[in-house]
Length: 145
Image (cartoon, rainbow, N blue to C red; front, side, top):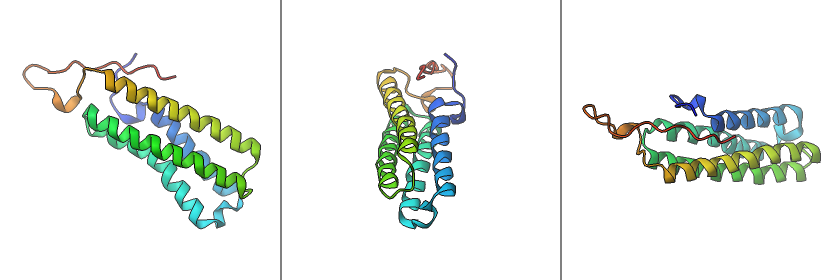
């Protein structure tokens, strides 16, 4: 396992970014572009997943990171619910829904695995290192694939 130095290195953030880009493609390819309220809600929830992962990581403390991952998981569930509305309003096909749904579930599972990993980790985070002793040792990132 490799030590992660920036949030962009996190597999889970990369998957959340793909999900956000998948949403952008739905907007370009469907009548969702004119369903302003749903489009704006989906834009917010898909962006929130990746943004919360990034913000939590940048807080440099595992406790805060866990909290932001929980928020990201909630936003991910919100996006999944909104996919149903896209399907019901015929903005996406059943096949496209299944593809996006499957990716979303993977993200949710990985978020939960990461939360569980951090709950069990003795490492408190970068902010708790002391200059003289080095404090906590840096954790190895779990393989969440």
